[in-house]
Image (cartoon, rainbow over all chains, first blue to last red; front, side, top):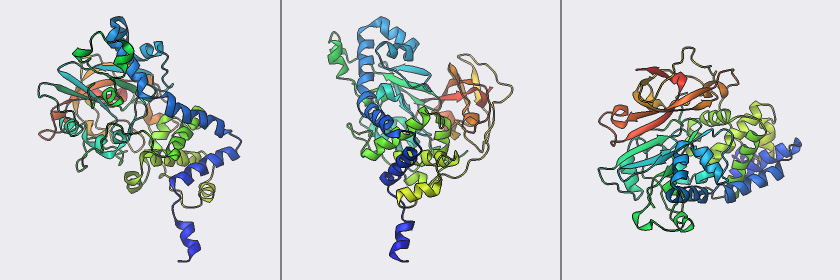
Length: 198
Length: 204
């Protein structure tokens, strides 16, 4: 094989492939550059877990909001200025209790309510979590540092359709009466997915 | 299709690569790959079901070794080629090397004709359907029985929507399965909830 053949047959790096797609679309006058810069910004700065944390803190401190959130998640998060994409038509909020732990996954791809809980972390998208969490939930949660007592029932929610899920963690009892902003700081992305507790 | 993507319940995978501060993105090209596919969806070049199905159609060895955003960019490129917006040759020339895309699609299907409306508490069975095209029924619930918990608003039917076939929108049911029923004597005890399209269900 000559040097030239090797160059022709090597697979382009993902970065080269992404640049090729963008250049091809630009060449067709689609004016991609401005649009994707705005989308880059949304993905990194706007669709973040702090949105979900605000929702949880509000639900912990405002019983009427909590009722609305559990009845119609999408409408309730919209009250806080958090939008959902057009194809996410339904947000189901899953309430943890001292005896119930809800956990979210997507076994077939990696769907999430990303405008609310942020774009998913890499472990959520990995083959290991996707294959194992539905079948070995308690073992997997223990491996991830959440060792649940046997009396806690685990409910796993597989995101197979365009319904999206968000876990509403139980408020730690020592934080009753804290201001909303301080409560929001306790709520992590992983507790919104259900693999951690605040 | 019973593809490599359908991972729920597969055995042999090791520990979760978990850290508390795991990031969504590691490289700038990952952010851009995500933005480009969102751009294409917003422009109406393809829909989410076509996007998901083009990922599922990736050659299985490529699927397993690709990172999440490499799968995303492969789907995007596949659909741009299939919809005649770019040619595969142009993408490879611009990328300066091979640009693997997914395998061609099989045919889709429209809704099941006699669909039933279910209520919370109904016992339902997942039909034993084997579908060559796109389907959002994970194989681990095929033929299994569970209890309806709730009904969603109507969504486009993915088996049709991924293949530009006409179909009615239909609701999904959140169906609660017991892990012991899904994998008898071979699962941690838990309730597994799956959003199941109406066409996939019959009364048990």
